[in-house]
Amino acid sequence: MKRNSPLKKLSDLYTKARIYEYEIPTGKDGFLATNSLLAYFGIFTMLFGKLTGVDSLKKNARDFLKEVKSFSKKIDSTYTLFVLYSGSSKCVAMDIESKCIEASLCDLTTADYRNFGHGRHNWFDKRPENSAIILLTNNVDRALSKKTIEVLPNDIPYLTIDSDKQIPLSSVDQLLQSFHLIEALGKNANIDPGRPGVPEFGRKLYNLNYYSIFKEKPLVSNRAYYSIHRKIGASNTENHKLLKNWNENYEAFIKRINNERFTALIFDFDGTLCSSSKRYDGVDDTIKKELLTILQKGFIIGVSTGRGKSARENLQSFIPEKFYNNVFISYYNGFETGTLGQNELPDLKRKSNDSIVDSHKILKSKLKNYDVTLELRPGQLTVEIDDMDNPVKLKSYIRGTILKHSELKVQILESDHSIDIIPKDVSKLSIVDFCKNREKELGLEGNYLCVGDKGIWPGNDYKLLSTEFSLSVDEVSLDEESCWNLASVGLSNVEATNEYLGKISFYDNHMKFRITK
Image (tube, rainbow, N blue to C red):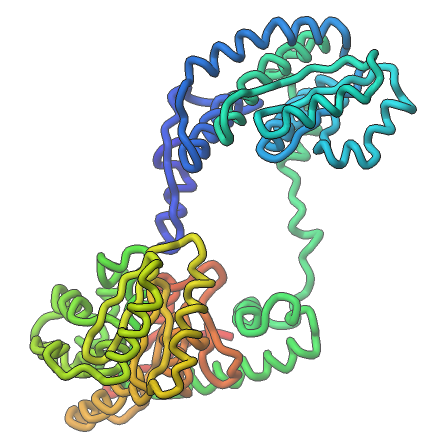
């Protein structure tokens, strides 16, 4: 609810994070954050529906005042209130509870209509005095609310906060009405809900430092723990024996990669050199300088991508022409490879692979009623899923459709934004031979380090990151000898790549990757 907040500045450091900013017109909020809460309700209403008829909402709130005044005369601050809700009214019930308890207006509890019928109604049998009910209703549950109140004793005070608006606008309507209820309860308790006063011990509780309570002596280093956690998951890292075994694998990998001499670095493009959310912007600005340094030191860069010429054009936009012979690009997941200076690549006039053409015909027929885009190239069929209602199920359907045609000699790979179907004998690793040949021409002798983001099948980097010296900036496989994500906690994708590049030391005829355990 504020532009350029500290949260925004922190978010800007991570390409995977997205932040939506609004400048709330009412300015700074009070103790109960009423204005910002109403603004949030408005934003979410616009996401899932329409925020219309605001004047009628104001009128409903004003008309509700009479009912609130009548109800507040029947109770006092010693009463226990039950707020009943269902579905979309739950958020309003939670807010009423929060305001009443935090401002100490009265004792209050919440329940949905079903749980109230299962046993919470017993309160009104055992403690009928000083108990009352608030019912949140709308077009969906109005009849249920009426039936509920009809079977309860007649002498129980109750108040209905009703909305005739459609969901989700009904929640905004109910929230506005509930503000009048809170005001009335505050008067009964002689407490201003907006300024109830905060005790000294409350300030101490708010700023309580509890980190040391949970801090334990680690069995392994922080970097090791999070690297292993990415491999085997949270629950398995609690198994000390398993953690110890994986730590041995981790240390062995660290030792190998730190001792190796490298003369080439091979990268995936999307999600590794550029953010998937900003893929049309190309290589991230933080990465460009590091890549240029590698080239200036006389070493080789390979880029193996599912893209076509857009990757080449982006790299050419910041890499000087004098380095073109030391930069190789493997297009369409390895179907065609060349130097950065070969503008004729990828060659879209090449005869299309028969299995790829057949895959296109099959999917074009099967997916005609789905919101997808099919793009056929000589060595790759790209399926971009535009329907985001159920992308996981649709991806599974696409894989199953192709795999049941055993005559198709293809493989199916995935990135963040698409499914790629490529010939069975094509691999992102085809770029390795080009890099090695260039090394010989330059008189270099060393290994290559691969960096990508989709290291587990069907991710399109799973072969690239199955090599002996391979680092992931996101997803990892279970292979203990390759595809480790060694990035610091909180870093992934472009930020992780940038951290890896910062760990490179340069020597006369090789590079060293230096990372602490």
